[in-house]
Length: 92
Image (cartoon, rainbow, N blue to C red; front, side, top):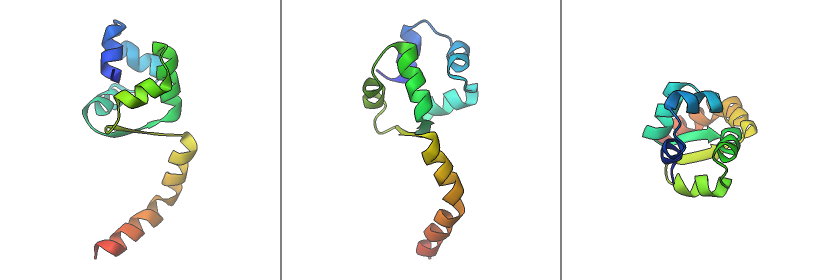
């Protein structure tokens, strides 16, 4: 069951869902429309909110979503410029 189905089955509006997860509506729409990186803390919150195992959420969102810890996201941000330089070097 994907995130949107869970939200609807729990009679939750998009606004309520966003408030409970502390995300913006544009973030919600991005999660629903294209592959995303979702912080692991949000995944934990989803699990608590819908009372389902984290694995069930991951399985339902496979091939659409990547879950990362905040530390992973910070590391990527810290090294983004170096990563971009490497990518550009090999594009030539």
